[in-house]
Every structure is written in structure tokens, then in C-alpha cells.
Image (cartoon, rainbow, N blue to C red; front, side, top):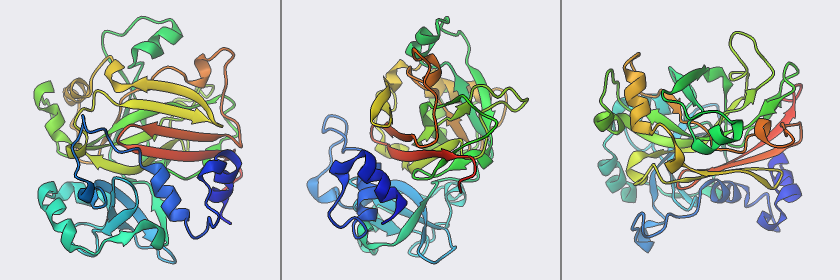
Length: 339
């Protein structure tokens, strides 16, 4: 039995199937994908629910080192491989650069080979792994400012992370020996789709490719020049990048973090101080944003540092991160010597 399914048995016995090995991939994607949006947000015909949508994932098939690009259905049960059936690139960075027409892609899905996820032996990879820039914004939720007893900022403050921190939606987070106060913070991430410089807030969202879930893990006690944001494995992201055409209202999505079954964070993107369009506009005044660049938009209240008493991550902890319509991740914290 896989370590991941042991993890499910320990913390979420209601998820487990009598034959977990046979249904592992089915479980992974059903749990990673969120519940279907309500009819008030998006009208989906029942017959369309099983068709893969523009929810992009990177993966490897068993016993292969070749990276593949695919789309998965909204319920997480069905998938198509794009990299062998279309002229789409085999990795997300190149695919974004291709500026593929999503309408044409959705129209062509019905003619592709559609597979059951639980019938495919695959390893899920981060949906993007080589962005040029990863930029985070500090204190961007009203309740996060309130819990720190600080004033709401008048201007956004940014920090950077590096691509070497990226890990997958089911991968382990290593508790580095240099860090004793390791904290979590679920965030909505923006993936840029077009190059832009000095873009207006009105036009900003037209330059976005899609959105995904991230955990911005940080060592709060590590004050080296690069800070505690970019240690290896400190940026779980995924499970998919959801194209913006599937997210009708990015400013009204709930966010959750659950640690060892306890809900630690709950918030909504409507409580952002600086909205996504303004963040893109603001950043583009100082630097050129390129396809594949990632913007982390801040975290709501509930991080471990600001609880009473403080509650930091320890080896053995299990973190679930979920954002409405975007998906769900499940990462275990392990000691620094684990692979």
C-alpha cells in the first residue's frame, strides 16, 4: 500500500476504498478537485461534466521520465493527454507561450482519447515548475492585518520566492534543520499568460492565463538575506492550473487550510485589500511580467504565528489546502533527512 494511501487511512478513513491500490489515482483526483461550482456561478450541462476542461496538469506515466501535459475534468474522473494528441507543448511553460485558443481546445476534446484517471498509472507533477518570477504580496487580507494588530497598508509590499522551492500537490514539505518556526499560508496564485509592462488595472486580467492553489511556507525564524520563503519544498502548488475562462468571479472564492484535521484558515478572496487587477497593474509599473510568472496574492487570517498560542508546523503534520473552483492539495511535513 502506498504511503499516500496510508496517509489517507490515518487522517481521513472515510475516503478509503476497500481496494485502495486499485482506486488510488481516482481518489487523488476526486479529492484534489473541488466540488462543482454552483449553478449560480457557472451553468454546466450534466453531459459536459465528464469532459476534460481547461484544468491543466503536468505528469509522468509509470516507468517514464517524459513530462506530459494533460487536462482533467471538473469532477477529477476523466483526462486527456494533450502533448501526444495535439500540437500542444509537452510542458506548461511552453504551452502558455503558444497562446493556444481555449475555445478550439474545448471543441476538440470530444474527438480525443478520453481516459479514466483511475486507469492511468501516473505521477502528478507541479503544474508549472520553471517560472521566471515568483512574487508574493504581504498582508493583503483585512483579517490577516487585524490578527497582527497592524494598520491596513496603503500600498502593497512584495517579496520573492525562487522556483527551486516548488513542489507538487501531493509531495512532502521538508522541515529544514535551520528552521524551527515553519508556518503555512494558503494563497490564490495568478499565472501570467501574456507579457505586459505598465498595463492598466482595467486590462490587467486579460494578461492572465489562469489560477491555482499554493501554500506559501515560510521559516519565520530564519533571517538570512534571502529570508525564509525560498527553502526547498516551501512552495507546494497545484494540483492543476485552471484557465481563467473557468473562474467567473475570482474575487469571491473561499480559501481553507486544514492541519491534521483542524481548520486553521478560512477566508474569501473578496477580503483582499489589493485586488488581482491592481497587483498586476502595480507590479507592471516596475518590471515586465512574462508568461508563466506567478503572483501570490496573500493569505487570510489563521497562520500559525498569529494563533494563541503560536502553532508551527512539525514533522508528521498533514496540511490540506483548498480554494473553491481551483482544487485541493495534501502535503505532509517530514524531517529534513527525508527524500
